[in-house]
Image (spheres, rainbow, N blue to C red):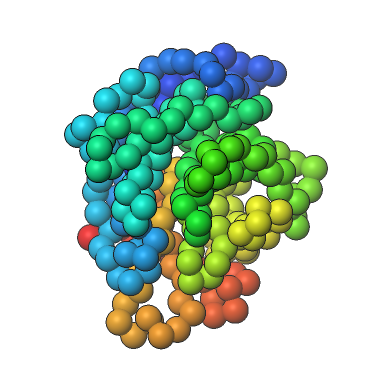
Length: 255
């Protein structure tokens, strides 16, 4: 499962050159809210409904949660806070680790939505920045953190951050959205490069990204669809068969 704090529920932090940047290790307050979202990767791609979700009621809330991922396959709850990542064991409901993200920066309200958190194919947690095209990977076994600066195929020299991030097992790739540019990106699983996917319309204020379940007549195809949460409403994105472009339409991300 996937959770997000809305753009207008995020905290404001200190500004640097007119852009507020929060560095891991800072603290503050934030409101918690749910997002229409999919279940785990396998469920979302087998046709599970998009649902409204909130953090489990047993989450202790030691720090306000900005985003979270519930990994039901491995029995883990990953929570992104202002201080980095918290990892919980679902069976025991106990915190396993508090993980700092070196040099992690993000802007947040009122400039952008929060960064995002995704679970990769091996159970790793991958965290974005909403300011720069850099990802932080938390190893699922050692919990060691590695930093990955992406090479962009477009917009080189510009700061492109990601406010929505999801992994597609079918495509064996991560996909991300940028709220500032309203753009969609494909990221290779080794976290080296990001490829811009041209869209029929931009996705302004995109604040969350989830895989759309495939209909029965689409399950044997390479159909890829996304649900994008934005301030003014939801967007549905269908990729072309060659996955080199996408069609955008307004819609509802709920069940």
